[in-house]
Amino acid sequence: MKHYFCYENSDEIVKAVNVETLDDYRLRVSFSNGKIRFFNVKPLLDKLAVFSPLKNKALFSTVKIRHNTIFWDYGKGIDLCASVLYWDGSPDNL
Image (cartoon, rainbow, N blue to C red; front, top):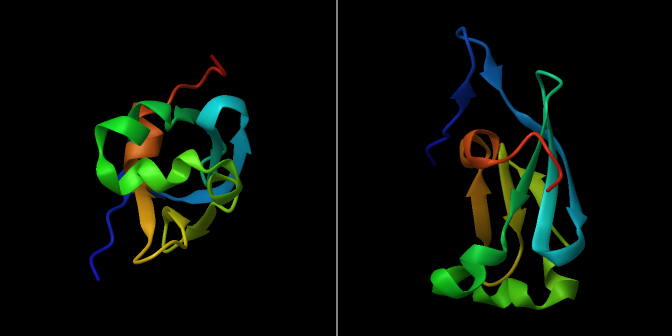
């Protein structure tokens, strides 16, 4: 299994250390460098078929961190790479 990590301003690997679900299919992700990013999953729910099961809010709320990815244990699993959450996420809860 390949692992993809994100780096910021050095060779320090930035890892996802905590994830919380918010209203309207948003995530609040805390990283090992102390930064927090907010990521809106909603646009992916209709855009990519693999994410469509997450329209079920009960399933969406089961998100966890696994191997530095954000992971939902459904079927073969649904995940988002921490680097995507970090770089495409927002520092503001919009």
